Length: 124
Image (cartoon, rainbow, N blue to C red; front, side, top):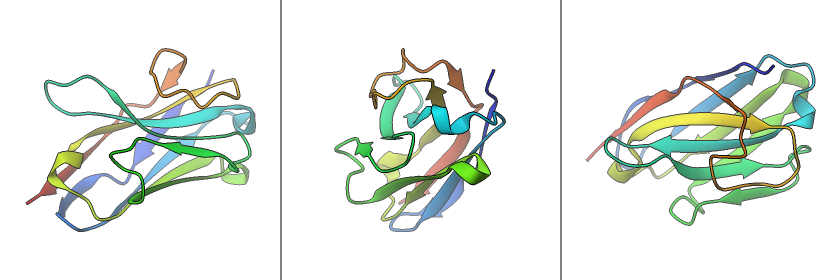
């Protein structure tokens, strides 16, 4: 069982930055691929970024490539999402998710564990 807790959301102006944190409870965290997803009102949950077990491989949605950076610190059981040059269309609830495997999936189904989400609002 893995519990994930996101933090760091908030209100920011367009062009600003936010850093999200996903803290995991499991001591085996280094065995879990982690992804960030987001869901805007009235829309499906969509992939944002994912990171491999060691952190050496990452994958991004085209909409955030070059602006967002995912990283992890396995010693702290934590994954980060640094978000720069934020746009109003980045407004959503952001979720971290984890599963015990090595493929950096961009769909929600393979991920077994989800956090409660953190709201990110970007004003124009």
